[in-house]
Amino acid sequence: MSNGNGVTATLSNAAGAVADKAKEIGNAVSKRASGAVKSAKKTATKAKKAVGKSASKAKKAVDKRVTKAKKTLASASASAKAEVAALKKKGAGKKTAKKAAKKAAPKKAPAKKAAAKKTARKAPARKAAAKKAVRKAVKKAAPKKAAKKAPAKKAGARKAARKVAKKK
Image 1 (tube, rainbow, N blue to C red):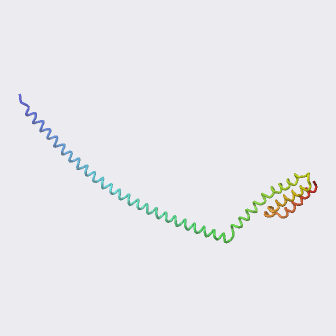
Image 2: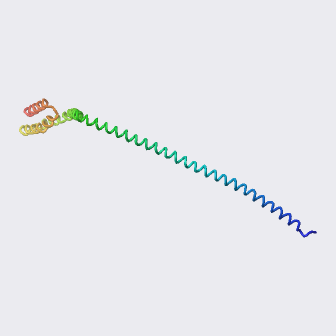
Image 3: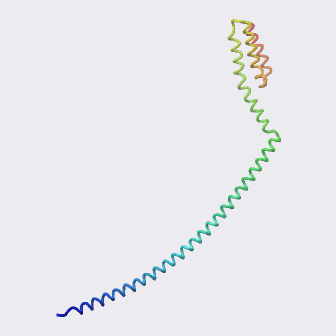
């Protein structure tokens, strides 16, 4: 038999061939990978530039819109202030305040009349004390009614209070 040198030589030749083939494949893969990396970098830089440009355009558009809105609001505010000043000169605010006072006055007056009549009716025992109480009630109620535009009713209320006091 042989000492095995031929088998060893064949195995070493095969291993060398496999190593060479692996180097070739590795080089090819690295070349393609480096090309892919380069193209990816280029694409990324292009995308970055595009995003920067669109962001700056968007920022400019937003700035324009904001300044336009501010101008519109400022002009609206100025016109509203001018309108308020014109209305104040005409006295529109005073008229509405007077109307509101007139509307509020009649609602409160009937309750006070009823209170004055009740105080006059509750004191039947003492005539002198009743007259004083009626007069005090009428005096207290009279200025409030006069301020609320009811002079004719005030006189009627006094007469009614005096009649009730005299009868008792």
